[in-house]
Length: 472
Ligand code: FAD
Image (spheres, protein in one colour):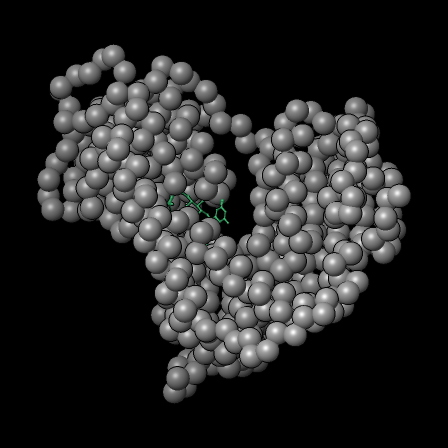
């Protein structure tokens, strides 16, 4: 980095060893910076320890339930299949410990010093560790992530669990009430129901997955209901009472639900409390997130922040990019900005959602005239498995220049497909580019290049319904 000064103990002190912090620390170190990183819990952060990774392992576990059922139509007899929750938990814990070790090794390999303690800001160029040590730093990066929102302080709230605890339950809860209808709530609702729990989702709104394309929201709710998830819409939890080993959940309308666990999944709150930010003048938003500019710099020039603590887009790849961009810009002399325009995301419910770009409503709100292309079909695999699930694909295309503005999919492997649609979108793909792309047959993805049913945005969207028809 060229300008080493020994005025400070380190060039960079990173608070938080999650997705954003670890990437920033490693890259800054490879640019020659003297870097220290503090992690108060486990290296790897939310995503690795109690988020994306263990969640996806649970999702795989749940998939087998349907796979065993579906196999019968293909001639398989699977006898004596049974699911053991504690085996899943133990194997998952082993894999998470391995990953945590890999994170540690990668940091050490690049020469980053790891401090297994809580750290707080103690001046524009200083942090204080839990043991009282004060460390001075030319730059401080706050990458402390967030924690589950516990909502209103209703009676019995402490009886509820969050996504933090769900990964360590001693048994698969026979009955669970989940409050919330965002992606985390629904992913757990879906996988637990598939594994055999009796799941009720309590949501104060009337639709799941706010912010997603309307048709995708409706389709997913229908599919989850078909898979055994019960929805209590327009409902809030008034209290939770322990009745022996059970929990009685009282809803605002007086209804009682009996459950073994109650999971609160109503969003996440940035980890800024008690971090010493007020005292140094780091500006926060109303919900406690750190306000940063496009280069992730806070209102204090020596203090930067990346990832969930900034509440920009709460996804791991975004936190990683922000951390990387910060390190390249500040220590590598290679500034670049993270682009937030094309962010593919998945919801790992069954069926899965993959989505990228604008929803139809967002595109319309910008005053664009649209062509909407949709396919709604029964996947080939379902013909013999007998599963009722359908696939919905929707492309939002700008009428002006035929560019793809958004893609919204519900069905098997939607996340995998959307990752690659995002590449095409980044290159400015038009619907004509999709059309001239040869289909891969037989697949679900081929529907994306053979979509012909067009609806103008002002048209009422008719129900498109077809069996998966060979494209030959
Ligand atoms: P984090 O990964 O949260 O890391 C912050 C770290 O800082 C933590 O390890 C914490 O212990 C530590 N820390 C906090 N305060 C201090 C302190 N004062 N001193 C020392 N250490 C401190 N994203 C996806 O992209 N795909 C998914 O499928 C996905 N699934 C998810 C599922 C669940 C259940 C959850 C909860 C999240 C999921 N996410 C997913 C979101 C993803 O986990 C986060 O966006 C990502 O982890 C953010 O990274 P980060 O570096 O900002 O913070």
